[in-house]
Amino acid sequence: MQHIMHMNKTIIILGPTAIGKTDISIKLAKILNAEIISSDSVQIYKHMDIGSAKPSKEEQKAVKHHLIDIKEPNETFSSGEFVEKVNEILRKLKEKRTNAIIVGGGGFYIDSLVFGLDKIEPIDEKVKIFFDDICEEFSSRYLYNFLKIIDEKWANKIAQNDCQRIKRGLSVYISSKKEISSFFSNDKKIDDRFLIFVLYASREFINKRIEKRVDLMLEKGLIEEVRRLVEMGYADTNALKSIGYKETLQYLSKELDKNKLSDLIKKNTKAYAKRQLTLLKSRFKNNAIWIDIEKEDGLQAILSACKPYL
Image (cartoon, rainbow, N blue to C red):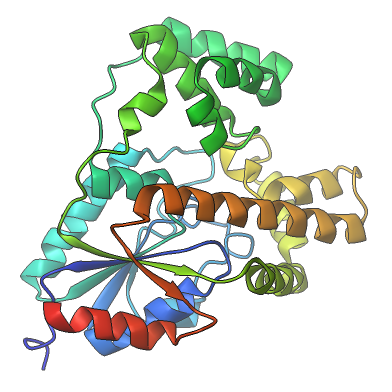
């Protein structure tokens, strides 16, 4: 059976947050004798389970997951490191004749994996320190305004408080006299090892799921999780600037009451899901199979499309 089920492609399942990727990927992995590789930029962190909607311990027991809980919240994980680790996992799974399913929202990790990494010249350390200091003193929004002037394309792809990527965009421009967005050009060939699916649905459907998910996160103890992370000394890390965590930090520092906290996480998550879909459309409009999960069964649609590759 295992031999028959071996695929000659690696499945990638993308889609906006809360669309139901985890659920579908676990069911699919059981049918296809596959292991799951997470490409989620927050699930890589230990101690950050609730706010990152990490698969539960039961789900992780049922199907082996990779690249979850591999870093402390104060550590970094670059696209280059991600690509290297994924290729290593894929190599090992191929030897075992086990299939692989890569699951995530999209974003830079997947971009680097399927379109290849452009060689960005090393950045001058002095430039890096300069922007670190400015970000520290004036905030990421201050730097974001400069980024919009020199590289609007990159600025539109990232959040105004994503200090790490803002600094990277500015540092690359100063060091190489080239916009960082030019390194992620749209005309690159997609790696044909992958069979890519994008799950999508109407805005109303996604927003309802987001509201439900945020209520559940708060019920499960998101505030306690963030309080614990603060006690561990992780309050100022980039990891805690992600949605769900940054708002809860504001709540803990008395800037928000509990109702406002819930509303703000929902609002920011909805805006993020909208950005994710825009980015997915710009990158994978023609080289992925798009599945409207309101109109068809996502699992069945993926299985049908996989048949020729078994």
